[in-house]
Image (cartoon, helix red, strand yellow):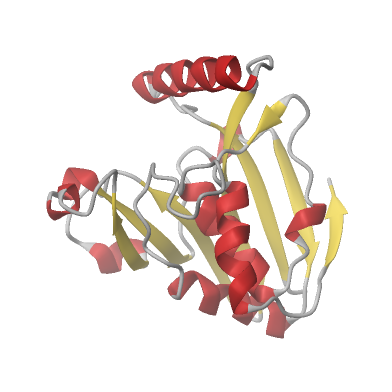
Length: 199
């Protein structure tokens, strides 16, 4: 059966201590400015199954090397500024990877299964390949949130017609950038809805 599995993975999982520390500091500052309590931060990834194919969709930074085809890279974008994107360390990758691997999937704290037909699955795959390559870490759409890996995932789902507004964050957590992806998708029109099943 065709389906889309959305995974919520704690930022910095898998021993990425510097990422975890930076994310924590970012959230402490953001919470203070917004006058709320700090929350756990999550990033998202998809495993898409349709027909005989299984694909992994994720957005990763930095790009580890120039062998893009080995990771199913369909788009590349700059981090912080377009100028810095000339250096590989300041580029992020959008991957739609046949039988790919999500390195930190074992740390996912929650998953969401989206029941979808083959047409919805193919719309998600097509949307991933057409995702805007906005600057990572910048509020390019004036949503109050940066563009990042979560933006890529919410954009692809929204363009494909998945009701992203109904998707709930893990308890006590948030996914910065999620709203930016939806905002980028709305002007382009959203297709028919799929059905959500929470696990």
